[in-house]
Image 1 (cartoon, rainbow, N blue to C red):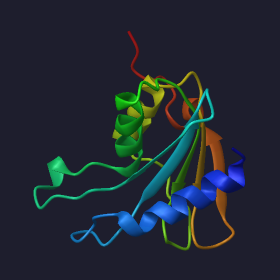
Image 2 (image 1 turned 90 degrees about the vertical axis):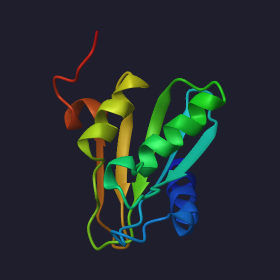
Image 3 (image 1 turned 180 degrees about the vertical axis):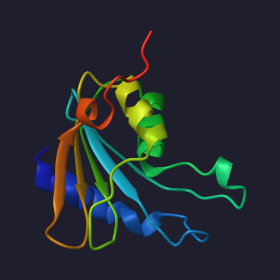
Image 4 (image 1 turned 45 degrees about the vertical axis):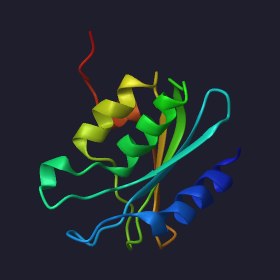
Length: 126
């Protein structure tokens, strides 16, 4: 799977977000070391602490299918500028990657292309 296909997969799944409280839809798509595609969307709850982000949703879906390694992850938000993963998602991504490539895209031509180690220096590890 190439990066453009990954970006399109994130955009395609964005219509399925459940974000009635923030009105801030987020979608994520990634492929693992085998090239398998996984997607996720944010799912909000009136009790905000129970909300799950798109990135963690995609990762949990992958884990249930036996995947344990993130190669490249794309985050899409229908905004004018790219949105990076939140802190909790950064730690969650790090759990399943050596140094995953993280690409944030939006409705403009702006793109952020980095790695999880740059987004989360000094991550918690055992």
